[in-house]
Length: 163
Image (cartoon, rainbow, N blue to C red; front, side, top):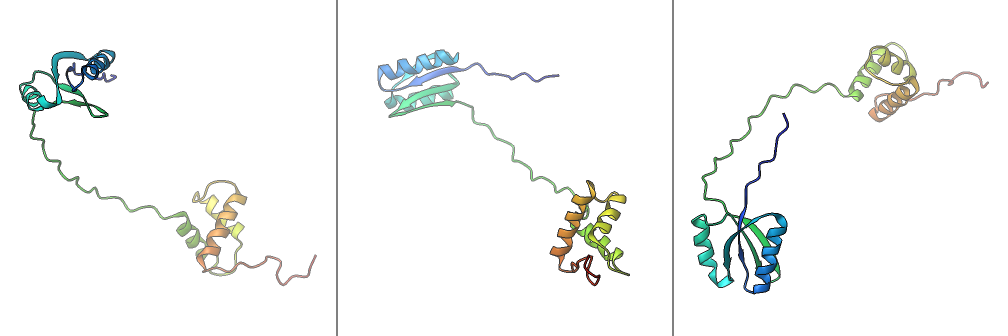
């Protein structure tokens, strides 16, 4: 069920020293669809404005002071409930990073004899530990192995006669 926005009907007082400023504020209120409370104040009547606000004669004030125009809603003093600290939720252990999975698999596969990055990538894809195409997975495996410092890249044709 969609939520509807609840709007409070505003009854607005104005506060400005010059008559033209008060007129401009009233025009602004009318344009916004706010109700004029009928209360108009000059800046030297600030204490009267505050007292009328305490007596709930209006629920908003639109004022011009110097070159600033401001709007403020008037709300009764309320004891707000103190926010309770959020309880920490136990986070499950994070799954191993792809880099750690690649390094672990490379360690296992190369324990007996040297293995190519393509062979490691192929095994990871077959086990569902890496997704994507074999060339892309091979590039990722190569990058991870080089950055680990634990594996040495060797040319596949090393030690064979040139073709």
